[in-house]
Length: 409
Image (cartoon, rainbow, N blue to C red; front, side, top):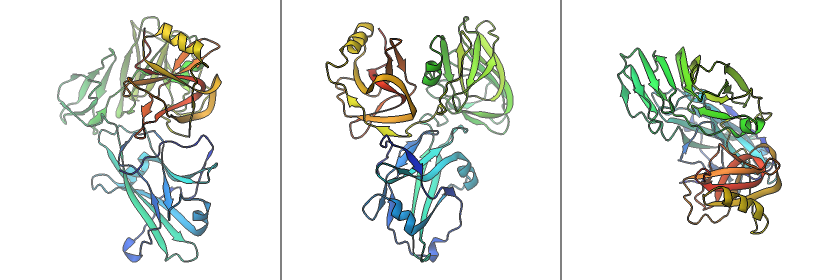
């Protein structure tokens, strides 16, 4: 398997040449000189996340000279007879070269959109064509396929009844062609009555992970989050009832840029109700909320990367003691600076740190806000790469606590 590059240095990325286009190209008319390569991945790529793939030009990464010599085009299409190329292009947000300003190296940047349910994985065919500017008959091209979807996106059941309890472990479902309407009951007590039309397959998966930007902008609020991450969209607008506690007074929708739109201020016996033709991300609160100032999308992932330092044993003894007194979890502490604050954009960090005896499939990330003496949970879960390093994405700086499981006494 070729290496997936999901991390970059913490420096500015600039858009390189060859943004996504559509072009006609007959490969049989030319010889492929085969002098460059993109080191793509055959892993399942999640919608809304940014992926950066390493490049190779005759033994070294692509740099500015490549674009001086060659005119470069990127084409996105479909190799699936059942999916049109125009459908694939609508679902792809980014397929382009970007430059690491510190090293001068170029990476291939890919991101699929989140406004689709992905009940079936989407196969994306990409062709990158480089033509010699002085002799356009001299050409090299590189083709590869990427697969986009959710790990729980495979349809597991066909629904024929007018009421169905959604299992959040198997949230992708298909409705029988004769079914006209179905009430969907979610595990948290929320429900949605859906009038069915042509589309019959949807992913109703959701999480309750807090949006860190909303949390940071509203430190005094009592918040409850629900995020339908596959963003299922329907032909008809129907009533969604979200179950919340009685003390919640306001319900907001969290937009892609993290701004908030008030959906309801009427808590009716523990339910907020409103009409919608798509399921998105929502937050309920006991007080009015303000929108975060950041413009980062809720689905953003590895925009940049850096390597935080592993904290020396005695340098954060107070924080270590605080976590040990308050919680029973195993944990490690790292740092990026010593004062809590916000970064300009979401950044992916990597660190070589010992996670012995910790369940690395169940890691959580927190940033320590010393002024308010609180740990802020990130919606992004840390992972361990194939190189054994710890990877996590955040827009905060300061001291980080990575715990086994959500912090609990």
